Length: 99
Image 1 (spheres, rainbow, N blue to C red):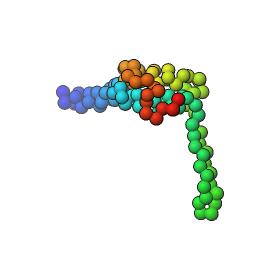
Image 2: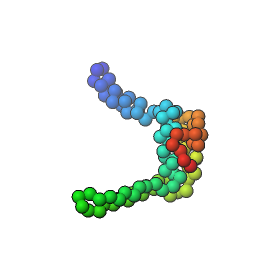
Image 3: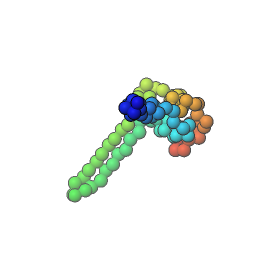
Image 4: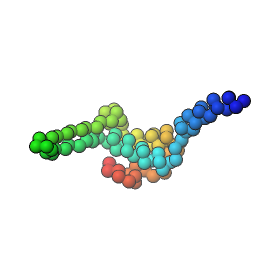
């Protein structure tokens, strides 16, 4: 019996990891995904180090943006999938959202 309990424990841990997350946490995570769906984001860095000019360019594109999905719809579906509930606060009221 002890052996079967030891085998069952990792399975239970895996299943709990797949469960819903708290609504507030889902809203924070999904606001980032919605921001990415609103358009490309990136950075450009230019500087001099060790006597040499250096530059770096990074552009991030999300699949949601490329497919033309509405950021609000992305946010609502993401929160529902992650928490099992619809968002309590609209995307426009999420901290850091600049849609």
